[in-house]
Amino acid sequence: MQSGKEEGISYYVGIDVGTGSARAALVDQFGTVVHQAEEPIQIWEPHADHYEQASSDVWAACCHVAKKVAQFAGSGHIRGLGFDATCSLVVLDKQFRPLAVNAEGDRRRNVIMWMDHRAGSQVNRINGTKHKVLDYVGGVMSVEMQPPKLLWLKENLRKECWDKSGQFFDLPDFLTWKATGVPARSFCTLVCKWTYSPEKGWDDTFWKEIGLEDILEDNYAKIGNQVRLPGAPIGNRLTSEAAKDLGLPEGIAVAASLIDAHAGGLGVIGADVKGHSLACENQPITSRLALICGTSSCHMAISKEPIFVRGVWGPYYSAMVPGFWLNEGGQSATGKLIDHVVRGHEAFRDLQQKADARGQHIYTYLNHHLDQIRKSEPVGFLAANLHVWPDFHGNRSPLADLTMKGMIVGLTLSKGLDNLALLYLATVQGIALGTRHILEAMQAAGHQISTLFLCGGLSKNPLFVQMHADVTGLPVVLSKEVDSVLVGAAILGACASGDFTSVQEAMETMSKVGKVIFPNEQHKRVEEASVFPK
Image 1: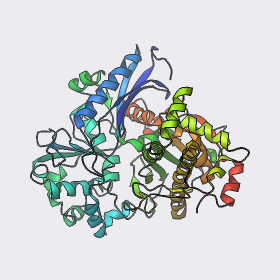
Image 2: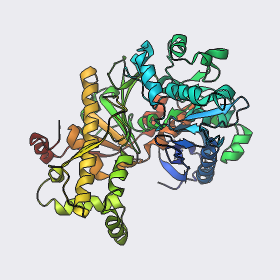
Image 3: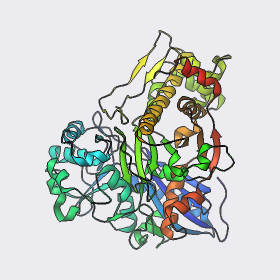
Image 4: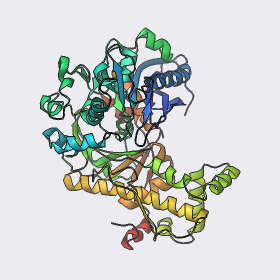
């Protein structure tokens, strides 16, 4: 990051609400992150597969981080504000107050998080209808989308919540409402998570068939009848109340939002790759796949024409880059899975003590430890007899089976640090193989992908990045700004401000290549030796 405070510079604030924290960045007109801040957000897990948050906590965290970064603008001008967030469901009553989404009646906990899987039976019934809208979610709706969660609320909390409800927001749209007072929704959220069609709007027959006919009341007022393209300005800009809360100038442009993974895609996929010897340099942007990898992973591929991929969400029109169709693959647990495996191992305490003694992060230490024990062989060979099937939280793509479970094959009685390091490596390889599985499904359906563009927390891990290059056989581009999700959110604000003529122009100007990682030639022997399960 660089110091700001230069006269004549235009700045944009991007706010990203992830699974467990809110972050903000002050980004200049060239795409440089001048300053950023982060604030944790509490998560409740009252029952298995139930994950909840408080929208008041989310907004307070956004305000906290926005105030921190805004002060670094100095004499520069903050011109626009963009939000992205997880696709969690926010429930408000008719007076826009929080409603409890839990049997305990705790109104503060009014957010059903994206990773909440309570609506398993509801999504099975929805998929059983085989309604035509399901064609645009890979043929199978995910339990992480909003219709099954709405149906769960109606069937389980009808009097306490459903009958009192006034608004159901996707979290990114809740944030733009808080900032502008306008309950408009983004194409991104409605198309990707709610079955909205950019061409036809809402399909009455779908909501009636799944038992949610009351959603049609007042022209779908509860779930959105004002829809904006990502990056389009909303309402009369930032209200005085929100400006005070956020510590930002009143009246700056507020952009229609994106889901967090889509913001990451926006922040990396348009970068100029000249001079890096990449095939995609002379290919259309549709040859690039954006892989946003954090708690979970999302695989974003765009196309000029709709491509239907079984088990992969979409095609969604203008859901990430206006004018392009989007297919979205995903893995429900990646960073969360690695943490689960490593922290649950008997040798974790030993790992933590040794990493602390060296002043290193535990994954930096593990990567170094693998280098020490690999001798002359490539790192990938170390896990030749240890394999992880990574679907510990179900399979999002391309099998689209929430009942899938994880599996480890090749365990021994070993329980020391070497064993922990090998299990960590096998988990990373299993996740990379999951990415390859998704890529193969996309390629078979018609996508032509030659380069991966990675961002998110896991892209900071060299082993994770190299394994994805090696397992897929494709080069990996890392952004100059590691936190590309925040840059993507800022790009929205830049577009809404009018400083750029389109999202594409802002994306091409503000996205920068940092590093390119090519597949390790030695690791080709790993695949030829069937170290990686096919």
